[in-house]
Image 1 (cartoon, rainbow, N blue to C red):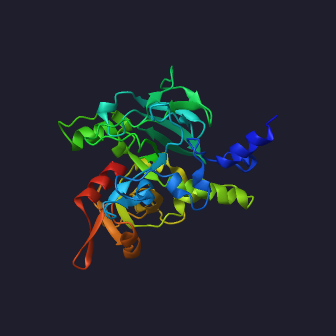
Image 2 (cartoon, rainbow, N blue to C red; image 1 turned 135 degrees about the horizontal axis):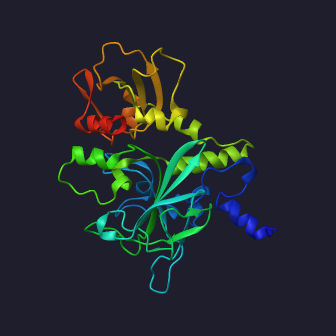
Length: 336
C-alpha cells in the first residue's frame, strides 16, 4: 500500500493518475515545473541569461540557436556543493547507449534509452552525468522511475559547467536515420564519429516541457495522453516532396503515414516538417515530374518560420523560399 505522503510525492512528480496513462515522468526529484511561477526553480539558464534559455527550442543566441532539451536544475548537493540528484528512467525502456568518457562529447557522460510509446520508437537522453549507476549496461531494461545515474556537470566544452549551474540535460527524441554511421561517413569523410548511432545529430528532439504539461492537462481532464497526436499537432514549418521507392522513415514510423491521399505509395511522398526538422506527417503521392531521390521544397509557412527560425532549414531568397545547405543536408539525413 502507498502511504498518503508517498502518493502526494508521486503526483508532484507527474507520476500519479497512472490509470489514465503517462508516456513519461520527470527524470529528477525537481517538480517545480508543475508549480506556476516557479520555472526559474526548474530550468538552469545559460551564463548571464534567464531561465527560458534552459528550455527547448530557439532559446539561445537571440533566438538563432537551437536547444534540443531541458536543462533541469539541481536541488540536492553534497557537502562540497556538488550535485547528487538521482536521475531516473523517464519511461519503461532499454539502455541502448552509455558514454562514460566525458571528453568525447559536449554531453559529457550520457545515457540513451529506447522506449515504445503509442507504437512509436522514441529515445530519451540524459546528459552531463556525474556518475552512472554501478553495473548499468547496454541492453538492461529499466522500469519508469528506476535510478540510472547521478546528476553532474560533465562536458567537453572549453568553458565547462560551473558547480552552480550543475543540471541534467534531458531530451525526448526520434531517430533520424537507421544507418547513421554509414550516412555520416559518406557525408563527412575523415571526420570522427565517436558515438555511432547515438551521435546527437541523429536524434531529432521534441519539447519535453510541452509533453509533460500535455500529459498533466490530459490527466486533469480525465483523458489519455497520446504522444502520436502530440507529434502530429506540431506546427508545420515546410512541406517537401521526394521520389523514393523505399522511404525508411515511412517504414519505421507507419503511424505518421497518411493513406488518405495518393495512388502510388511506393513511388513518392510528401513530408511535413516541424520547426526542428521532425517529419510529423508523411503522405503518399503520385510521382509526377520528380527525379529519383529528388527532394523538392514545395511550401513554407512564413509565420511558423518567423516564430522559430533557428534550425536554418529554409531561407527566403527574394520572393522564393529555398532549402539552405543545412536544410538539404537534413533532408538527406531523414530520407536516405
